[in-house]
Length: 131
Image 1 (cartoon, rainbow, N blue to C red):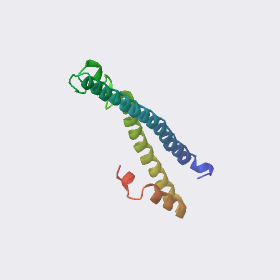
Image 2 (image 1 turned 180 degrees about the horizontal axis):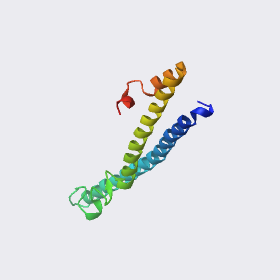
Image 3 (image 1 turned 180 degrees about the vertical axis):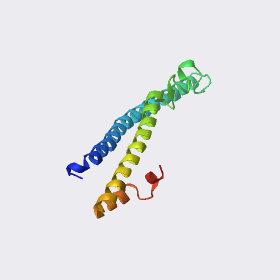
Image 4 (image 1 turned 90 degrees about the horizontal axis):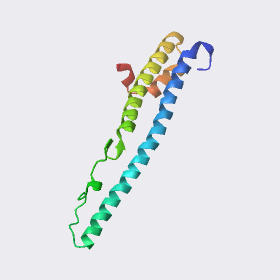
């Protein structure tokens, strides 16, 4: 893959790897949002426990600040983060489809066993060949 005539394949491989790195960065945000939501839910339960100790109803979500969903979130994860993850999934699928197609075209021209093996490793079940 390091020969100059395979520059397009290398460029597409970089695109796939960039998408993976972007996913990793966004998954960190997803994890942080989830931890934040767990903290918020723990606080809601603690407020309910305190109400119970004071002789009130121990109903979680009894006050407006205990709402199940904060505005702009789904399960405590921001809609922006979810949209970015969804777009990254689409981008990764398209990048992989293109990479596998380029590798197949290169393998057809060169007849390289290494290319055939690489294609098999990247697309062992033929999923990207269905596009």
